[in-house]
Length: 455
Ligand code: PEP
Ligand code: CO
Image 1 (tube, protein in one colour):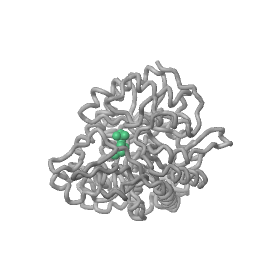
Image 2 (image 1 turned 90 degrees about the horizontal axis):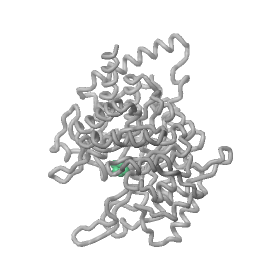
Image 3 (image 1 turned 90 degrees about the vertical axis):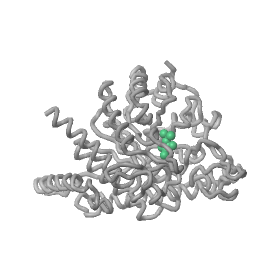
Image 4 (image 1 turned 45 degrees about the vertical axis):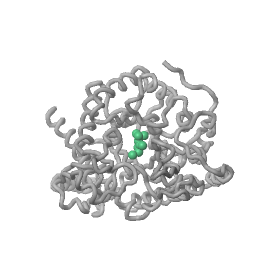
């Protein structure tokens, strides 16, 4: 088995390694100038929040908590507005309540939010009608319109992305602290368009059972529940753009460690997880809890190398592996991945992303995902972990609080023909509010039926 890397690390040591998926800026001096500015700005998150999250993730590793990580495939600067942010937060809070009710353990809420602005692409360039331009890499890098000006990577977008991430997290924190996550707040429970949903009755049963339990607790203790428990909400994004991440990397003297203070929990995407690559080099030196997306191409030695390089001390809560094999392939790959990690003797948190292995293209050319495949992969993930003596400690999903039609299926039975109606994603298809809630109900119902069967 590979021994951990021992060469010295510093926030820019990744620059000596091959870096995939990085934009090429025409004016390197302008980039340096922006990076220097970013490095001076105050951080978006602080180290003690990051440490609190790591401890919670350690609990999930032990089976005592469950991670709900979700949000847009890519946030856009245009969607940085109050209604969009509040809706996304609301669906995540509602899902977390449903999960709490079913799983009977704390739910760790982590948004793909407040910085999810950079995207990996399958090709560096895109050609339309004989014209070749750089690919759109997310709002942090360039703009989606197919013109030479829009597609030119612009370093100023790094500053704008940083500001929008801060604005987003500031608003989320204010909502959470100001009562939005108070279980008595009517906004919290309101289902919006899901009012006409076949799921309404089940959801309302759960909501009223929680309300009864709250009344009981508060009657007994004389205290409001939200005063007793702080509803924490954490931010995460793919740590793809390494100059951006480097600029946010600070040494915290009190902890004597380096942290990436642009987000609580950055992750390495599947396309940038090469063992000898720049991303793994950067991530090994920061102290945040981190995640890696795990796909079918990762064999045992690759996975073992990631585990020993990224968490040489076997620190609890440090490393989350998010597997995304697809419903078709999970049975083939997951048992081997679990065994490979077991051989290292190290602990990881296993999470299932049932979205990215189930993407397909309709005959009309739209990217979609079928709810039945998402559900199937998730169910198989629970079963396979249990059979292999491991456990699934969380779920990673792409969703929006809006009534979009991007994924087919679900309780309302959306078909390929419905996709035209409200397809808004410029990247991957997301679960809408109703489908996201349905997924949470399925997870929590699954656990309840197991408990009933066992009891
Ligand atoms: C994503 O999470 O949007 C993504 C690109 O995932 P992956 O790295 O798993 O393909
Ligand atoms: Co995606």
